[in-house]
Length: 275
Image 1 (spheres, helix red, strand yellow):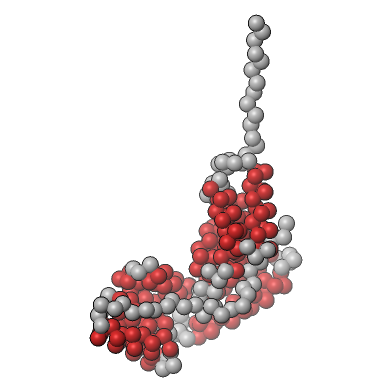
Image 2: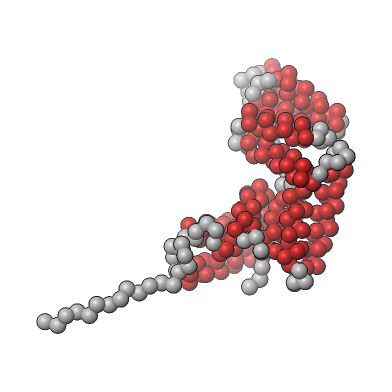
């Protein structure tokens, strides 16, 4: 009886930490790209989530996939989700100008104008005289204008870094409000106000957090302070009416909506790199 030849196991040429062959990853990435071009953003997000299962954290291909995913969320106007995704992507690949550009836009559309400026500066620096240099430079000028207008409403000497910190507290308060974590949201809105009491939104959102904790007198004071800053601020006026109803009927929880100034925007200008 002849001995069977021992055959060597075929090895796949996979990058370190990958759980699937590169050929399959490439096929899925192409699919996600096509889905975005055909405006199938939900499909693109599902494809990207599938890809991410097989890629290790820290891999630059992962950053590329996150870029497609962040763009898909942005095109659906889910800007907070887009911001979180692009924030992860730029930490993995800090040399990709397109990721920084899109991260800047996601910051802009979530009222993080300070962070938006910093990210757009990085995008312009990395792009140099590349194909998108002109568009990136134009976007930088716009980001600069927005950040400067925000700083102009603060006290003299208020820095861009402080603006980034303050806006971060505000957005964290918004996120916690969406989760119904009212005490934590209250703390973030109070930090926002402590850094610079110049806008009605933090006071109105603080009022909602207090109202949801049934601290009605404090909530009323917060809404009134919002209207002192901006007598035409509709959200505070509406919440004062809701507060009056809740005081009469304490078992009825008030309705409120966390809104974005970009809800009515027709088409965001996020971009993906053409290979």
